[in-house]
Figure 1 (cartoon, rainbow, N blue to C red):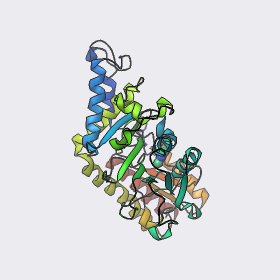
Figure 2: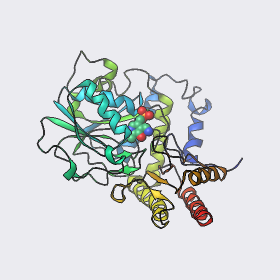
Figure 3: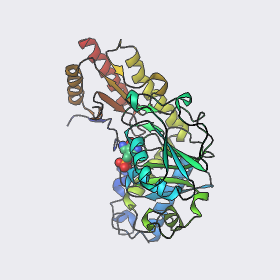
Length: 363
Ligand code: PMP
């Protein structure tokens, strides 16, 4: 079989070391005669796995003690509902900045729950940028309120470069596609959430990092499975957790800590993305980037070739050469190279070389 290099937008590549260790979780002998798939989630052995994943993650993301970490299910998509359902009893308005399809889904779901206002959107320019502060609609906020943003827009390949321009409101962030690649200003972020399947492991567990101040309220009318407080009180063991996925998350985060931690992965994602943006910028528009330069994502590099025929040929040849998962999302077409933490620099260099050669042959 050809070597496959996985650039999927998520789920995506995990390091071989993590995959090999994950397999030991299925070995009964290594786990007192019961594999992790079969273990009671009330056992002491599972509790160690659960606590280990949480403490590795707290260390990796430098999460302060003011915030709790929850492991829930339902994907980041369920958070589009849970966030307003829990927060709109404390805050009276949810402001949203819509920078892509996932951000738009979060905005739409929030409107079903309570008072939700659009602060800014880049939909009119096909989500090619993060709106500038001067483009925002509101300057006087209906307080108390919070602001929801999506830190990285997986489909369009844009990313907030920093959070300095954000208004002085508690920030809620969907960090699904860039968690673990840059600092998060925890003093400003009241809640952050991410599905694990890009930078933190396998699909099936969602991480919620929440300021404990939000956990005091207990609304008995709120369905218990959608209540952060209920999950926090039970240490994310209110019901059966996705034990194996939490185990894999622990392995992935432990691996990232051992490799050098958050700063190391920020440096790696800078290097990986620079490699591709350099090719795009030096290609005379043979590879035309979708994102405005000042909003470019270090996680998802999106671009198109000059014609749909060339685009198809590029994707076909790339696939034959072993590069998997680089076709653009169906809503914008083109190509997308996703550069999450499990993807090695060596694979990126090979893909970059492939792009250079393809351009030389076809331009
Ligand atoms: N937010 C972002 C930024 C995403 O990229 C995705 C999935 N690609 C989601 C939310 C939805 O995540 P899930 O499939 O875990 O519900």
